[in-house]
Length: 255
Image (cartoon, rainbow, N blue to C red; front, side, top):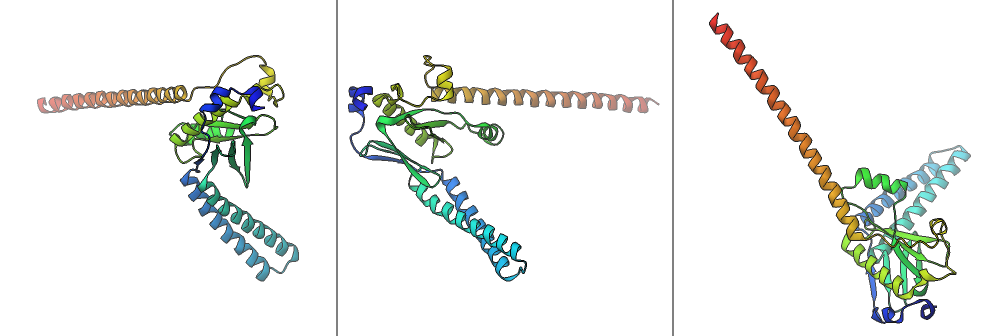
């Protein structure tokens, strides 16, 4: 399939061996570990209460089930934190595949099935990005074009923005070289069906960064101008008040 759809010259330019690993964001790893320990302790406490302190059978079973599930999920999350510390996404040139950890699974997408493209945040992510994050978050879709599901990672998922940029560049090079996106047998998403025949291309990351910087700079300048206006208004008010007081003092001295 790679020979039919791909570009032999571009394939030859790709590394022939090696694995490039991209670990998860350390702060997310630490947060997951802390939360998993907290919920594990809560789960044990609920199990303990259910076994020793509650006499009602239904309540006892309910507490034990909830506590047991909390402990189990906490153990899984804690264990996963060590896995994603090794890599969240990896590009394996030995096996010719892009590998990612999704929840508790390790998913491998062969190069000849792979497409990488810029992604977009869902509504919840967009709200968080807008209101709670100072730096822009960028998204990358990792897609097996012959499967219904596709996966997305972001610059906040990985250890650094530089890691994200490098992963994005590698994925785009692989997708362009192997050409799976050009297959007529690929699964088409709703936006591809609506815009069939249109090639909008992928959004350039550097352009997005520059646009974000420009917006941030404009906001900062507007805020600075607002503060300057408020300061000027306060100074004018103080000047008027001082002049009025001087006039009042002069009038009292004349009398």
